[in-house]
Image 1 (tube, rainbow, N blue to C red):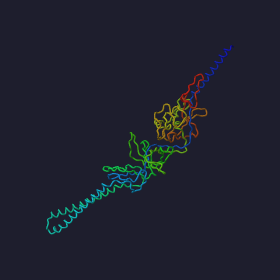
Image 2 (spheres, rainbow, N blue to C red):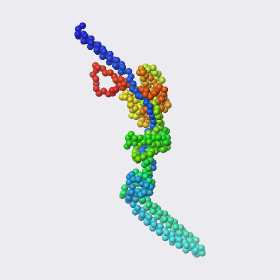
Image 3 (cartoon, rainbow, N blue to C red):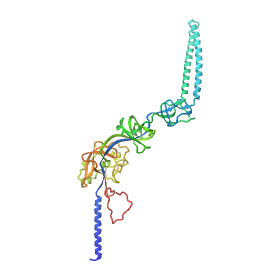
Image 4 (cartoon, rainbow, N blue to C red):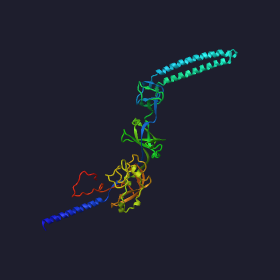
Length: 450
């Protein structure tokens, strides 16, 4: 045998071996590679989310009942004031003049009354002795009554002028903290139509409230004395606690959405919370402690009919109650896109990854409501694999959900068990990377990857 034939034979064998290896690897990579999550034990809190603004429990607007120029200001922002303390003074010139004029009018009417009284006393015995007629005496009586009424009216006018003069001194109606000051010295205020606001006083900032707007679809879950947690932007990572004080019956229509105002009261030791801060409120509507939980993607995952048939699982045995609202309400965690539970095509599993290939178009809701898999007490299906890598369905009962994980229970579920949350194909491998053809030039910078 010539040397050339030997080289050709060896080359053919090498090519056949390479082709066989590529075929085997491609067949192996075509088989589904699952991604798993672990059944964990923990606490689930089901909440309803809303936003509101912090404010003092009681605030009083301090105004003025008289018009004039602000002559003096005795209080400023953040000042602690006591009830009856002088806050400001309006220029009293006009009111003092009104008092002087009223006093003069009262003196005039008093003189007129004295004159009419003397006339009455003089004519009364004459009328008794029939020296004057009844009509003449009647005129004297009327003059006395008119003079008396004029004197009383002048006294009322004087009292009113003195009261208006006292209104030029603005006093604090309650003890508290000045949170607003709306006037300066020299500014003219007009109280002809309505009392202008000069100051806003908060009674006690150690006890505050939040007026939260709750959607009508969630208001039925809010009750008096319910526990509340909330956060504010100035203190990231810090959670504050409060309690539902009142659910107001009056509704408000905003952008065609009906909202109800829920009053949340809270303690503010140290005064770290300030009026006007925006609070993100979480109303705790349900809680489960020390229970088994799984990611919501595990309950949403559904194998293909071919995978079920290969595992000998009837589709009717694994049917679960699903709805489009499950995808829209954020069953896959914050920031996820709702899916129907098909094979997942993203990188390793987290609480907020993409849901499915043919899922709903809605994004995850910021406020988880009720269980998104048929409601508390309904049944669902988890999938796992046995020791021979054969697909296995586990029926569970669904409990509370916090939007990322859901409480499950059942005879076939246990802590530490691995459950399937997605399946990867050759296009987007997860646990098995596809083999590359050594005879084909490789392209760098591709998308995806293990």
